[in-house]
Image (cartoon, rainbow, N blue to C red):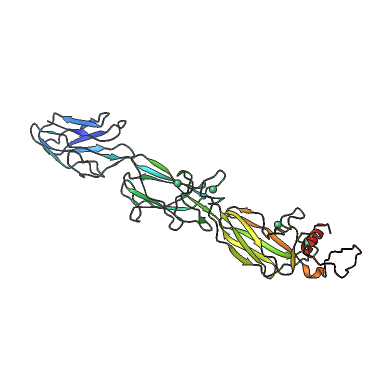
Length: 388
Ligand SMILES: [Ca+2]
Ligand SMILES: [Ca+2]
Ligand SMILES: [Ca+2]
Ligand SMILES: [Ca+2]
């Protein structure tokens, strides 16, 4: 008569089994003890008829799988907490090979929340982790997830380098990671990298990643979330009274100038153009921008001439509006950046009076029959380029 079978675990794990003789009749000595074989099989032989309990001692870090979830020759008989079977009665000559124990090796997942400085949805070199971000784990129904032992898993927060990890997870069930957008940040676009180890997985609306199912012993480190801080572009339209292309003391702002922002976010998405108007002091700002590359286009006020751009070697003091298109050069802003150097200067053309004419006979006098002409604007601009 014998009682045997095996624990379906990996071959490098040896399983200990204890056989307790429950029957009062046999409960006179130490329990029998069996050290399982390399393939997980074990047997107790030479038993007398009676009622026995097999107690398994699971490998460190594992948990028993569900009990009695199938036909008796295929299921696990170890109690989930005790490791012990129900009483097993052996009759004379019986060989019972249905007494088994299955264990689960815990799985884990993680692992990173980062600042997507350029907003492209990819973890690039030099982009830092974000600490203190709350990360929670749900099951497929949106309830708090449970670990391999059935306990609810509390939320965690990312460490100083943006890392997080959930351990002791149960294989074979769906886990959903939920990220809470940190204050002052906005989520970057998900699934942009074509490389799951480098992208963001947090849905920009729900903060949730797609559910994952893990196998025993697996670690999934690909569930990450990227965030950016809004960027700002501004900030000044002024009257360049002396026409030197530089914002000098005493040169006033111009109110009511239309300024339009176009461009592309860091993830490659074009933005819907945004239009603002300069305030009474000539200031304007585009706020709450995603990192990206943008163009600022100024609409020239009536009766003005655009001053020459990029004069004086100080971008905070010069004009950036093209004299032909009114547009700035493309400006790239990163997460959290404020760029207040995109300005436009105008001269009031009305003060330049009177008539530009073609002095056909070169006598320096506006003779009758000499035409006024259309190159007045460019002539004025040429004058503006001269040092004051
Ligand atoms: Ca990036
Ligand atoms: Ca990922
Ligand atoms: Ca000036
Ligand atoms: Ca500038």
